[in-house]
Image 1 (cartoon, helix red, strand yellow):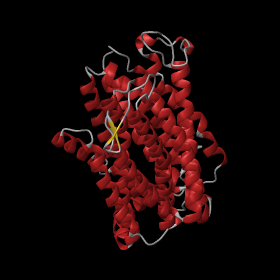
Image 2 (spheres, rainbow, N blue to C red):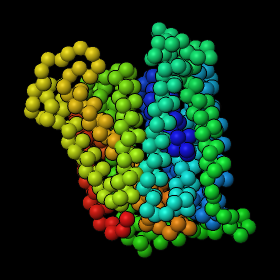
Image 3 (cartoon, rainbow, N blue to C red):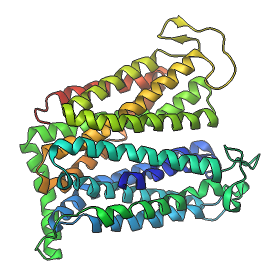
Image 4 (spheres, one colour):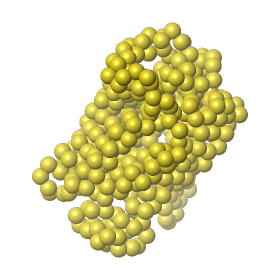
Length: 435
């Protein structure tokens, strides 16, 4: 239930509702808004790169993980709730939005480190994949349900005053003040508070260390350096972490630029992009469920390698599209009426759904693979390194896409660059012998 509890923050705040509101309505202009949002994301990523391995090591030394999840949950709740107060035209609204988003992002990502570190203590190794994949799938489903609730009943168009489903917003939310967009912060906070409770009530935790808390903290901090040294002594772990860093960079860029590509190449508006997000979440849920079972049957490594290959092929497919052609040279016929009317749009939609289907298994099997590679008693510090490897260069693939696009003056340069990232990650992971 942890993934279910957290996912609305990522779906509603980070991706589909609050972030577009910030760029389009709160910031002075969309370009400035995108830049400010990017700076806040980068700052949160930098903080995570520093905090994740440190707090993971401290948690290993102290023992139980739930107190750390609770502490992060309180920060997540407060920071998410604060987003309500970022109303258009209000003093300091931009600062409140950026600080709330950054602190909430740090809190939810650090909480995930402790949650992931519980995996080796809950099930035997042959069930890591199913547990991780099921959690990821439930998270996707939670994001989908929360998106339907917000778009269908809370967030209304400022012009019509109606939600996507044609209703007047619940609780008297004022579309003119963008209250339906701002409610995503408190909504995500309350959702987390309610649905994380089963973790605390029913999931067994790790026994507390006999060390006094202060001594345990000092030991945990000392372990950070030793973890980096130990990782170098275990080539499989170090190689996996480097591979994870590269292919996760590519995945982050795929999600970041997918909507931009659809809007830039095909002129998609909010309706097309919103439906695209809903459909992608559905395939992500199914993919994570199936991937978890494949993980337990074949191992994490084949699932990750297969997902990377599929993503590389998807990038080739996206590269082959423009408004008049598919597969590079096949001309398309006349464009019909309605959503996704042209053949290139339909193929791009299909390729996007494939991304959703394999992204869940890729991420879920990455955490189950690490759980197999490291001793269970040291899972916290190594999952801290996993978080570090997933964040420390998260700017690299988007930067490479931006530079390539500027040089070649075509959006097609984006997927071409990502193919290189995916193939590099595939090559590195292929050399990992275990799991």
